Length: 101
Image (tube, rainbow, N blue to C red; front, side):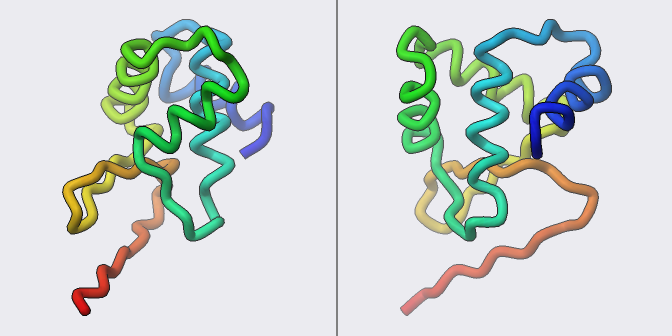
């Protein structure tokens, strides 16, 4: 997802919400993990976001994740360990397997 797609996402799914610099940074960080087969949990994702903007607080980060999830822009996954992972929501369902051995 490039900057144009991010702008489109805010005009579509998030149309009622302002496009803030923090929201763009958080969405961009989530987008960059898609397709890498390395889902990031919230704490790893927050560290990536902090690399781009040291001023984003943890509470802002979690509020934005909640908004993105509620709006259907981001999907939250809980995979076996209880940790929450995030990925960009897509109309095509993706499947996740957990090795039990």
